[in-house]
Image 1 (cartoon, rainbow, N blue to C red):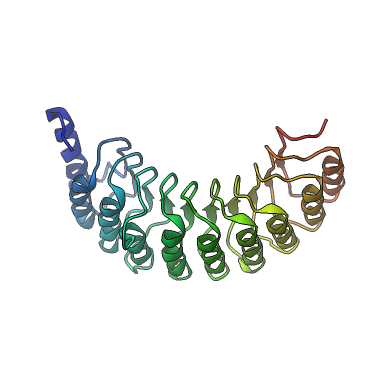
Image 2: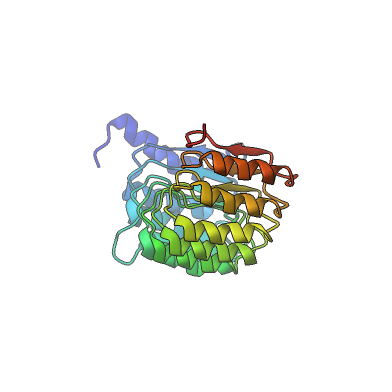
Length: 293
């Protein structure tokens, strides 16, 4: 990649600023800063010696699998970084999946303190998801994982669901805008019956179908940790709304439910109103762009 003199100085300053260990710089924003795989090597080297930075936002760059893998590998020697944003960095699809493999090692490393990992708008796919899923049961510090729009399918999501049933640290999981399908939706519902820590689950535009919705609704009857559930743009009709409404009568934890951009009609709204008369925790329901009058 060719840089102007000003751009080259700015890119070098990213690594230099991290390496400086300045106590006043705890959060660094370098999104859309032309960080490619070569610049990523300097950033990774700086991270290995840094002990002050807690949040690094480097979304919308061009580091790809190799560059992201290099940066993430450095977290095995960094015990202060809590948040890493690698969104929209063309991660995924490379042979060997270097970024996903490095991530799996890092989040299970005793020295890694990462709590929040943003990977949205990449191309991890099912193989990358499977590699991450294998590590999740042993990831004891990771609390927030964002995989929105990562070309995940049913196979990768099923592995994540199985990991979720074993994980005891994850509090927020975003799988929106992935075509995970009804089978994976069913497995996520089963995972929610066992998981005791997840508070937020985003499943907007995931094609979970009636089977997935039925499983998730069933889980809501007994799950007492989930407070936020997003099911927008999933083709939820009156029958689906009736399943959710029935579960809401027993649920005692959900406070936010996103159901916009679905096909809920008057019958579904009637079922919801009856459920709300018995539910005492739900505070907000998003219902715009549905079919009711």
